[in-house]
Length: 520
Image (cartoon, rainbow, N blue to C red):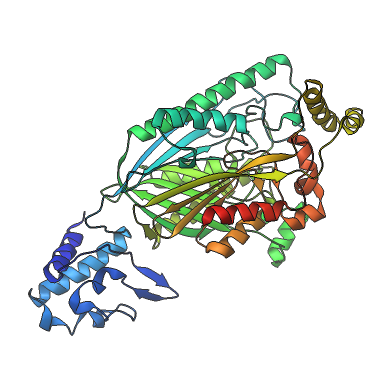
């Protein structure tokens, strides 16, 4: 705690009968106001509706008990301290407690990479970046706990997320709603479990490698969370939003024309340029944790070297700028957004740098402090498939010239032959967290297109943080518009995910209704 802030506390305690929760400075379009801090001081109440200025710090000396020069110094120093720390001061309340930890999830042997069906061999060469499982554990003043786990992989199915979450729940006596798990969606990471099972054609040897890696991933993920739980320390949290503009709607902008369209200001949306940032500071107000997100595919790279793509580089750059901190990337709703242009390592580095600069800009600015209050909710809703294929259709598909269609058909024929039933719906996961009194943190399963984030922000405020690739990455989640248009995100991607058919036409209504029910 700074000397200036101690002066400010002395001034408050000298002139108030009651000291309540203090809110941070808030500024909008050049107008500022000191929240409840000075309104709680009798001689300031009602005096701060206009922007704070030096002139507003005079004219009230008749009700002060301290020498005027000391009062003035204390107040000015207090104001400066608040600008420096940009944090909430909560008197008579327990602070947040936060634990941070990471474990490497870089494969220890060459295995198949996930993301592109065109790959024909395992990974090779020197990794460009490390791959991490990173865990942030939040504990509020009422001892409620939330775990945020991020993985530098393309995705994971319910088999992997259930294994990770079950182990964490057992070790820490937590409920499923208290665990938020997200994949960065890098396309230069390893295949995990059964995710995108109809896309790959492995030998038994390669399949065994992937099985071993999946067990390793689960162990490392649980280890990161366990260590974070063991390292809880007092902390303050603050939230802000920046902007990065390299994400391009890939359905509405031909890739080859993107440089020209960008230069002419003619790129077509929808898109979400927002960069949500959560800052975690220790008791000395040093930044120790930085969570940030962006809604854009991690598809800059498509070669055979391990990397976190632009999110991996962004985390490296943020940590270089804030060496005490762990940076953690949370993938947004960018299923129809690509980093364009792409396919060069220098571009991945550049996009990572742009994102890191946006994060740093937010951290240097005025952020909204979050009170130590946490609420976590989680639910699943049944998303229906348009049709359930019968044996005749599956037999026709099994004779297709498209080997991915064949792979999916054989998968479901095995189910039928074993006496099973092809499901008519899928249990789709959604989480809704609330941090403090103002930050909503939404996690949605699957590869969610950007229109969902925009719709949810319209409902619950632009400060709402909406993440895709969370809890279970089972398929693309198209909007009604994209469902009607069809194409990869609207229909054919379901083949590679091995789902029996595309979603029903009501998918958008069903998902948004589930989000609204959870938010109530």
